[in-house]
Length: 491
Image (cartoon, rainbow, N blue to C red):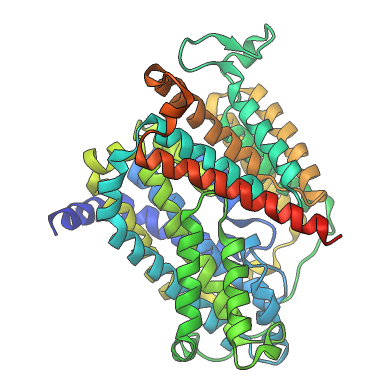
């Protein structure tokens, strides 16, 4: 109780509350604009958060991260265009309900399911805190190295059908992280005598290029569009009662979102498809799925909103991000010398509790905001895409230049924007590059630290947690090879 009060005092500061409100409301609005999404918004805002207190900056980013999927459901349901990539599955049943004249029912179900998934994940996070506080100190350099390696393996194997390119892109991200001064002896690597490479390639420059600037290119090059939204009638709270009639699907989907969120490299997509498949296979009316099934809509929205809270578990406990958005947040920790990991639970437990409370409050704030502002948010959908592209491009370059007042960084960001645009046009993943940069840096530092106490390869796995992590790596690789063998035999 004392720890809870300390965390509440930290988040009750006026600047933290303002950041939480701005992040929550802004995340909904950003999520409702097709083609932007939370990754672009967080990438643009990252440089600004470096000048804020860590709790203020992280609360702002958490607000955007946790609320954007609420907003992303609006265009997915009304105009069959997901506001964020995580809302793609929502179109399967949301838009057919709109075509039947049930738009308000679909939005109400989406909001209710998102709220249930978000609250469920925060409750799980709070319940698991004592376990995390007890287990996290058992992770030394070897365990964190193996956990980061497991994250790399999972990032690759979860891109089914694209594992080769995912491995290449992860390796490219690891290579980008090695450019500049190495972290132990400060010798130069891959600089080729160029002074502008000595300081390395900043993660934020790459993030802004791959996500924000590439998206701006897509918006500018594509067809200028200003979609129209249908009119809404009815209350958005009618879905709460319907959600309770499908509580089995909501509970299972929220639980799968939590499990998938904890595992690095998995995230919303696998949680959604797993939940949607379960709902379809156990439904009494499976023929409705894809044609306006309330169970399908609940499964999709509950699963994707349960992921953000769960994704904070590996980030806070081990300092290992599971996907691009938590990787961006990790940079905010590092800028303020707040190192997530085992020591954070011992040295600043009230900081961790404050972040949990922020996730809890933002879900309540978003639901209140949507209850009064949904009709107004519909106007955001109508923003012309090319005008939006100009805004995103301008803000991206302003953010890049503000990092180090470097025109070179702007040129690099523009180059990575081209790379990101090409990858998107080819339907290839961008996230492995970011996770390669982040996890590669963690792996290198922890490996070199642990080598002083390692005399043979078996010393790496001579402790229980290290052995378990090594076993999980072998299991992930083995299952992937088995799937490859089965698919080849079936050809």
